[in-house]
Image (cartoon, rainbow, N blue to C red; front, side, top):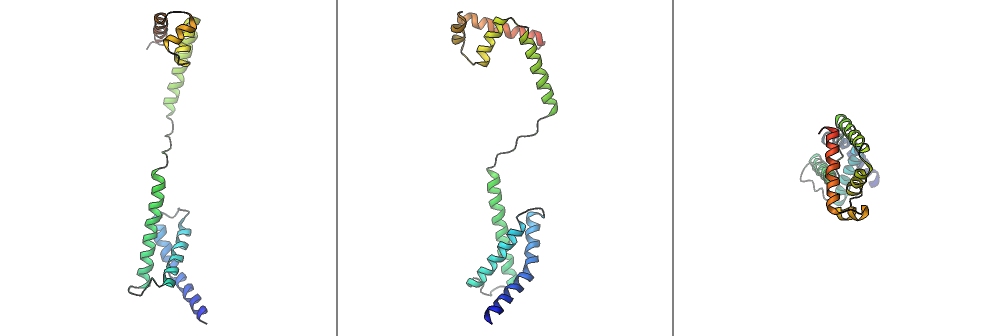
Length: 166
């Protein structure tokens, strides 16, 4: 008979406070939050556990007790989520179509200017900029002096700028 009364009390508590807790949780977290129902169930089970363990001493009303547990659990949930969000990487912004177009046009111009260079200039630029070799290493590969590498690189860049009219 006692277990029947306890079950009835639990059922009454659930029926009475579930809508109130649900309203508070949805208001605090937003109605679209997928965790709302789980959080409501968690709060209800916490209330029941605390009542069974004797933490509710009757010094305040049951409604105040439920309200306090609900508020604290909502705050804990928000803190957990913001802690996770704080360390999450920020997504990259969407690329600007105008910038993409300008970059594409610029790379086509550079490619066109490079294709009109003499092979010797193209080879030196390729080794120096794309292979990232030092001027000394380029000089060794091309069997020329370091000074000549500098001259070829600078002259090739000058030709490219002139071709692109920068």
